[in-house]
Amino acid sequence: MTKKVEVSSQETLGASQTKVLEWIEGNREEVTQFLQELIRVPSVTPWFKPKAEDSREKEVQEVIGARMEGLGAEVKRWEPSAEALAEYEGRPGYYADHTFEGRPNQAATLKGSGGGRSLMLTGHIDVVPAASGWTVDPFGGELRDGRIYGRGAVDMKGGVAAMVMALEAVVKSGVKLKGDVIVGTVVDEEAGGMGTLDLVAQGYRADACILTEPTNLKVAPLCRGILWGKLVIEGRSGHIELPQGDWRDGGAVDAIGLARVYMDHIDRKNEDWRRSKTHEYMPLPCQINVAQVNAGEYPTAFANRAELVFNAQYLPREKDEMGLGSKVKREIEEFVAAVAATEPWLVEHPPVIEWMIDADCGETPVEDEFVQTGIQEIRKLGHEPVIEGVSAHTDIGWFQTLGIPTFIIGPGDPRKAHQDNEFVEKDDLIELTKMIALIITKWCGVD
Ligand SMILES: [Zn+2]
Image 1 (cartoon, rainbow, N blue to C red):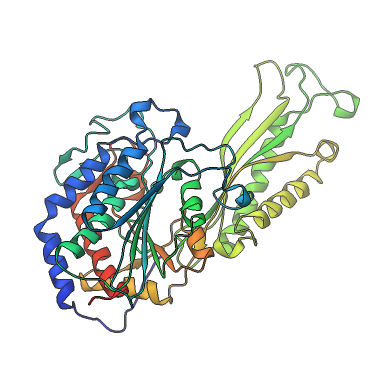
Image 2 (cartoon, rainbow, N blue to C red):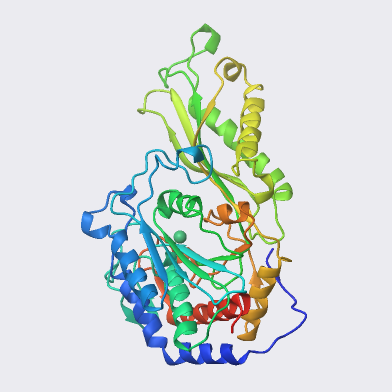
C-alpha cells in the first residue's frame, strides 16, 4: 500500500529558490499557455495510423527546442534509426520495424557553471489518437474552469510543459546553476518506448533523472513491467446438438470449456500472486488479467479454438539480466503446462502462449539520496509527499539500469490518460513546475 514518508529535517527555502517560486507565481499564465501551445500541435504516434496533420511530432520538438534555445540551451535533434540500434535487439524498447522519418528525438542541454550535479528531465511528446467521444476540441488546448483540455494534457504534455517552464523559471529569475540540466524529449513512447532507448543509446546521461508521466503529483521511484500474451487452446469442433462421445473415438472437444478450465486456474494463480507478488509501494499486486476471450465460430458447433489474451505484470525484482520479464514468462509457461498435464486432451494438444509485448520496469530505492532530495523539496511547498509506484509501464527502466537514480512525478490523474476529454488542472501544472524548479536548484546547486 502507499506510504507517507517521514522527513527528518524540514529545510527552508533558499534565497534563489524564493526568487524562482516568485517567478512561477507571477507567470502562471505563461506556464499554462506553453502547455496549450504543445497540445495545439497534434503528435499522434504513427503506429495508430492517424492523418498526417494529426501526427506532427517534429513540430512539438521544434516548439520545445525554440523555448530551450531561448534559455541558452544547446539543442540537438535527430531521427532515431532501428538499424543503428540493432545491437539492442532483445533489450527493452527495441522494435526492428519502427521507423522515424519526420519523428525526431531531442536533447536540450543547459550547461551549468561547473562543480554541480547534473539532472535529466525527460518525457515523451507523442500522444494516442483522440477517440470519438470528445465534447471539446482534442487539439484545442481549451482552458475552462481551471482545467486545460486536450489530448496529451495528462499523458504527458503537462509534465513536459512543467519541466521546460521550471527551467525557464530558474533562468529568467537570474539563478545560475552549477550542474547541467538536460531536457530529453522523445517520440514513440505510446508505441513501445524506442525513443527512450535511442536517447540513452546516444549517450545522454546525468547524475539523476525525473520522468514527468502523470502520477497525481505522487513520487514514483518504480513502475511495473508488462507482459502481453495470447494463450491458444486447441479443441475439436463438432455438432453442438448431437451426442459426441469420447474425443478418442472422434468426439468433439469444446475449446471454450478448456478455456474455462484455464480461467479457473488463473483465478487460483492470482490468489497466490496476491500474496507473493506485492511491493510495499505498489497499489496493486501483480496479476494475470484476461483481457480478451476469442473463441467459437457459429452457433451449431463446439469451438475449435479459444484464445485468452492476457496482461500480466511483473516487479522490478523479477527482471532478468536483459532487463526484461523472461523469468515471469517462464513461470507462466510452466503454469500453463502444469494445467495441461491434468487433461488428457491437453497432454496431446498442449496449449501454446504467443508472447506479444514485454515492456520493462525499474526501481530506485526510496532511501536513495536523489529520491530523498525530491521528497524534501516537495515538502518545502507544504505538501506531504506520497510515495506510490506506477503500476503500468513507463520509460524509467533504462535510466535505472544505467545506474541513474530516477523517479516519476507528473500532474494530473493518470486515469485520465487515453480518455475522452482528457484534462489537467492548471493548479497541478503550476505545482509541478514549482516542485521541479526547487529540485533543480537543490540538486544541481547554484552559484
Ligand atoms: Zn505517457
